[in-house]
Image (cartoon, rainbow, N blue to C red):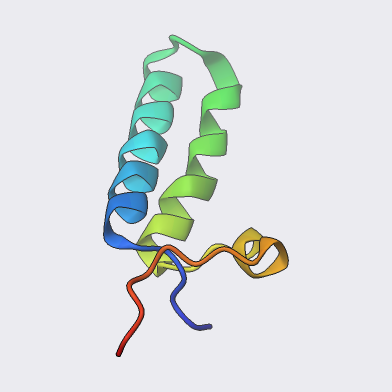
Length: 63
């Protein structure tokens, strides 16, 4: 897997995932909050499986 998630994208994904999971654990949004595992995992692994299909890469390109 080649990294395709850049620094800002990665930070936002991790934050969103943690917020969703935290809200789910507190009971504020119910079980749907566990969908936060997806952005958390893609942020931690720096790879989004949808990006290659869409032709997106937010990583800086090496010159």
